Length: 328
Image (tube, rainbow, N blue to C red; front, side):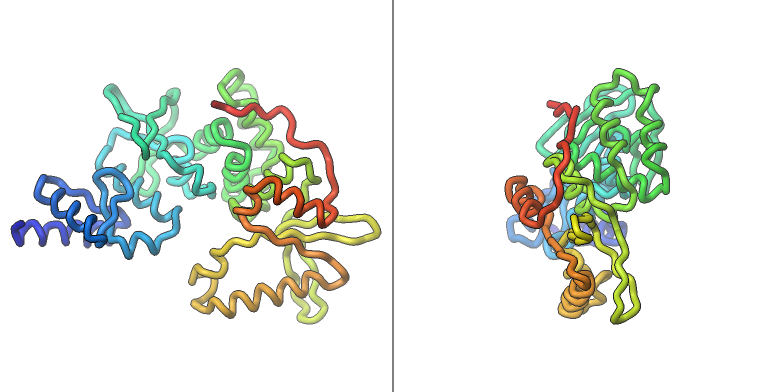
């Protein structure tokens, strides 16, 4: 292999890193070089024909990885439009990582956009297409409604919560968005159910899927982001979830995401300090006899475990989710 090809491949990787995209070989020599580097473990190929340095790629969060793939695809295929969950990623809407694959693509004009293990071609009715961070996608409003129609209840609720949080709109406004103009559209009844439960006070997709699980299992919907006064420091600490129990008691729920202990933007580079601060915060929340139940996204996903966990803390019951129709 020529030194020129090696130099060109190195430049492709450098340029891709600077632009938050991934490297794409343009000829046979470059493809051979990239495949060789993939075999040695120096590169990875997270999407057909797209490459990245393995150490850099593995250090990214899933949301960062998929965004870089989509930005690269947008440059390769200017006639592709991101729709549904993929458009949600483009608009920086909080969405559980498992809902982001395969990519959802529609094509402008005639011709085909072949589906594969990583891409699903979809068809959308005429709608507004916008440019978001160099990616073509359906408009934010259309994207959110599509996700509410097409995704499972937990993922759809996460998208709706994120939309309300970002726009400052109310659940009532969201319900109006999915009313008469969408009459008869596939999945619109599900979207209307999601809109009724949507709450912009949820601060992450993890909190949203936990609340969705509570609703599906028939637990009373908790209050979100309730503040509790700390008489020691004079500060107020917020709980992700809170339930009022008989005799003035309360149970607080906390979503335990690992990112709060691993993301330097949140820890300031001090993982141990972040852990200690979180434990101190919990100790203040328990002042006055309040109980705290903690859970992770994986534990929420295990419905039998999550149900037993909430029951063990005496979380009150109500009717489970009604009227939801799973889409094939």
